[in-house]
Length: 245
Image: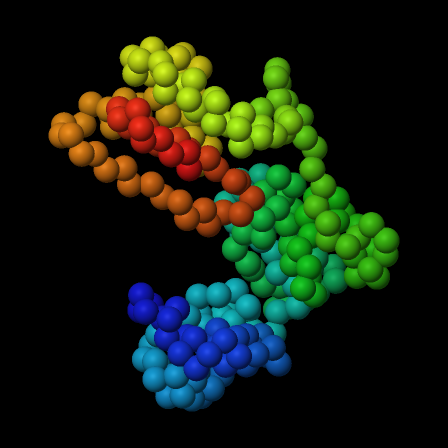
């Protein structure tokens, strides 16, 4: 898709937005007709291939999901957990195979067994009580459940630091010499929370040893997997530059 598609989509204002129109055209049957896509392309002065590419990219507008009534999550966490085949078999007792579609990551990576039904996301125990979900009984409203625990001192789930306390922590870290700080990080075993779990020390040390007085760090700040909430840390040997990601 064109890198300008986002701006082109709103060229007629927020009230007449290309993506909103795609969604509206998809509501009756689950996906817009090709003739309607061509009319949109002509109206918004956007290439027909770009409009078709956008419509076939999103779960609610792609032709493969036309006529679907319920959607099974095919995100990596649910697939790795091995819950989706059992979930699909359960849903097949209520829907035909043609009525069951797929969606990419519903943000329920902590519970798995995720599915989307009538505008709501469900996961966990809701997959075992689908009769109640259909009947919209109390407790089956799609709210997800969390089990929060920690081994040792709670960090992410512990009391949040104030901005002043965070600033003090950073100042204390930057007051150390680089060798001592990097050694502590290496000993701690700190890793990024993305899929690779890459050692943070290695990244920081590589940046520090890079030749040249001016250094650049390329940081991927686009988190496309809403259930994982990864964090990473960027570091430079310039003590005035520090940025958590």
